[in-house]
Amino acid sequence: MPLSLRARLTAWYSVLLVLTVALFSTAVLWLHWRLLLNEVDESIVSTTQTADNVLREEYAEVHDLRQAAFGMAVMIHSSELVVRVLDETGASLLPPKEAMPLPPALPAPGVAIGPHTFNGSNGGPWRVAIRARDIGNVRYYVVVGAPLDEMVDEWRRLLKASLIGIPLALAFAVAGGWLLGLAGLRPLTTMAAEAQTITEKTVANRLTVPPAGEELEQLALAFNRVLERLGSALSTQRQFMADASHELRTPVSIMRTAADVTLSQREREDAEYREALVVVSQQSSRLARLVDDMLVLARADAGGYPIMVTEVDLSALVALSVRELRSRAAEKNITMRTSLNALFVNGDETLLRRMVGNLLGNALTYTPRGGEIKITLTSEGTNALLRVADTGPGIPPDDRERVFERFVRLDPSRAGEGAGLGLAIARWVAEVHAGHLWILSSGPTGTVFAARLPGGLLV
Image 1: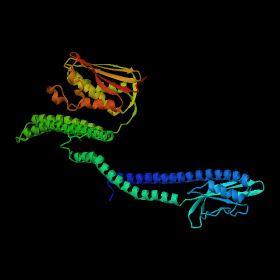
Image 2: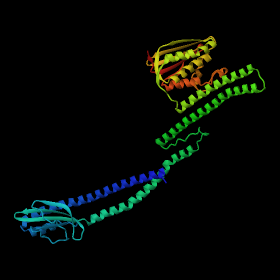
Image 3: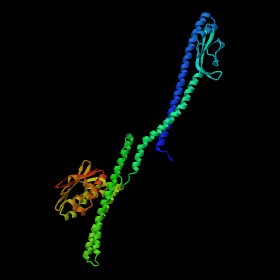
Image 4: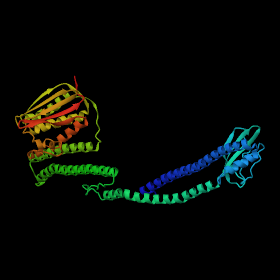
């Protein structure tokens, strides 16, 4: 079973603390030992120099090395240090107070050894320094040493205190780390509990942003932003489904009504059957267009619409779309004028044709009888700019962005002429080509839609 985050944090914290305390304790113990040793060494070196100077002065007066050694011993007395004077054979000229260890080889005249550590006869450590000197033809050695038993005992007491105190301190630190982890992670536990209560029915709920530091606040805010995007997407999806259901119901209802009326009597004339079939054909065509548009938008939302990029003659594509709609314009006595520069763009020809067709179809829908539609295609730097101007009633300023939303029709009387998806699809096509579609101007004399596509190449 994997450990909880709190347990892992406590474990890592404890391991790091143990290593830190162990390194710190080792450094303290080593430094303490070195300080004690340096203090003893300084005392030994100082006493060695003093003993040598006094011995030389005494010898100058009595001219006898043994008497000079006794005189020196009377003047230099220390309860912590042991001072000896050796003759040239290594024999002690003073009665030994303690069995101080000596180095295995005596040094040459003028050479000092130590202080070094040697083991005494009882196994205890000693710190010993020795200096070789000559007075005339007489050679002697001054040896000064100090037992380290008390120093070792003091250091061991410190070691014992560390071995007892450090585990206790670590135990308190681990317990404190566990409690701090519990308190520090409590906001995460609270946020997790709140997140589990959020469902598709309570998507408007948000996590409480805890005042527990910048990191947790950023986490809560980021999660809330994700919830906002998901809520917006879910709301859009629900609205899309509701609008789609409403739009699909209308042609299906009309077709079913036409069929029921036609079949309500056993015998009907051919003209009545033909009229019913015409209604069914018109509504099925409308239904097919609606389903096709909904499929395009659904695949666009899912990011699964394949984009086939080729070099497209945009001017020829616009001209073809205008020719296809001239018959529909003629039915309303609408004049369609074009001014097209020869421009090429890189894009999906099918999608670009749908965008142009939707813009022209929207203009035909809202241009009154006898009106005019003007289509211009020009270059704007490295971009291609397509304008579609109609002589319709215009769009109020508050609705100029809303018309690009799905299933939006500003004129309810034209509900049968479309599902309100054309401009939404046209804008998506422009954006998927790294371009933009917007309303350039609108007023009582008409509306101008503009589509900018990058990479327009003037031929």
